[in-house]
Amino acid sequence: DIQMTQSPSSVSASVGDRVTITCRASQGFGRWLAWYQQKPGKVPKLLISAASNLQSGVPSRFSGSASGTDFTLTISSLQPEDFATYYCQQASSFPLTFGGGTKVEIK
Amino acid sequence: EVQLVQSGGEVKKPGESLKISCKGSGYSFTTYWIGWVRQMPGKGLEWMGIIYPGDSDTKYSPSFQGQVTISADKSISTAYLQWSSLKASDTAMYYCARRLSSGGSWSFDYWGQGTLVTVSS
Image 1 (cartoon, rainbow over the protein chains, first blue to last red):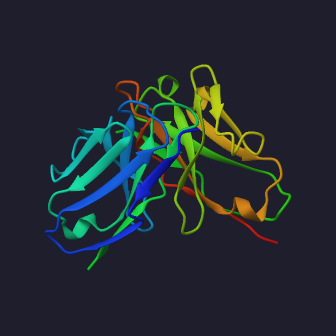
Image 2 (cartoon, each protein chain N blue to C red; image 1 turned 90 degrees about the vertical axis):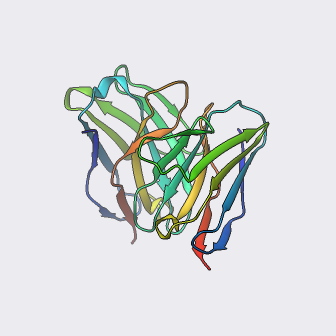
């Protein structure tokens, strides 16, 4: 199985800050990596597929990148509605696996 | 509009059986994989398995193989997740989700609203 190690597990940031979240895979699998946002009590929302493809309707302040087995989600300027938990997901092969999540909290 | 509508919350006792559902609408149900994801209270997301309603081809996570059964009835555009003998540790929110249509990614673009399963004596 491909393990996804997500870091940090939580981050405190202010509105306007740049926030970076990383997922490291236990082995390479190309670019089939997805990022989701989940707000408390809500359903996960797909933000990015294939490492860097922004889903329709997702603000351009969200971006994703890949380098080998390291994947990064960047929020360029944090907005109040971005406070949530973010998950990466290996979307290449079975069993599909999620990272442990990163909670973005208000500083 | 694509929608996945899940059945309502359940309260069950240990040892009981349960089948929850996920009804798709607004798209061709038989041509998109439907996955199931567990989220235990206060915890992260766990992929359980996935089914292709067109031919019922099913893949399970090793963590859930033998513990649950995933099925689908394409005549009514509904996927199911079932347990034959629930445990307290099955208490969680369960989501169904549709596989993203484009490319080779096994990510999920539409999600059901979730079904909360509570198992308690």
